[in-house]
Image (cartoon, rainbow, N blue to C red; front, side, top):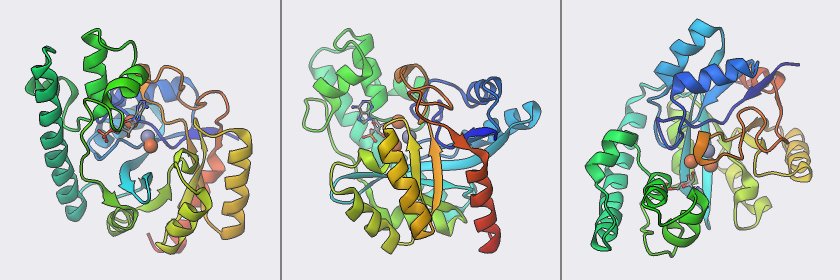
Length: 279
Ligand code: AMP
Ligand code: FE
Ligand code: FE
Ligand code: ZN
């Protein structure tokens, strides 16, 4: 059975591979499909789709939203209409809110003598800038040795260069995805710092379509648990590496930390379910 990867970041958000580079790598790895799931943007899809068309690789349009429910929860959307007006308006607002937060953080860093400029960051990293980019600036300034170290000591919650940004509810993310014709999936539930079963029940009550069972942060037992839960509850199963390129060097496209393998049949089930729903 051919393998796929339904969770991948590009330079559209905080990944280091351009959409074309990510698609080429997926092709080299002989994956049969790749979903582009950047944080808060769908802008990488067009380039990925044309690279996929020329290399003969199926590309799934996707997105990943950061949401809040008794802690941080990520929601994935697949097959969203990337031109949907409500979605576009929300994504523009998220960029506006991120910019406001990031500018305040950069001011704090500048006040501490760190040489950085937000306009340079926008030019270099693009529209959607987040803490991973700020972490990268701290690494380059020699204040941290890695992205992880920068999160642990500077930009993680409660640290010196942490400022919150507005985050939507799980309900809002699911409705945005569904209103844009997409399939909504709870991302990597075992990264949730709370009761996972309670989170899953909450998402089911809000109409979630599926759960990301296989992911770099899940161990074999957790993956098995989620797969059985999905089969029992009639939810779709998805999986992906959460590839980010060189900023998360321990996560490989297609295989994560070695434990991730997602069969093409899972994507077929998503497509069949969408057909049954008239999507
Ligand atoms: P932001 O949305 O800009 O506040 O940044 C949140 C993003 O930072 C998440 O979506 C993750 O991709 C990333 N992130 C959060 N914690 C860590 C960590 N400890 N190490 C590396 N990346 C992280
Ligand atoms: Fe990320
Ligand atoms: Fe995530
Ligand atoms: Zn992700």
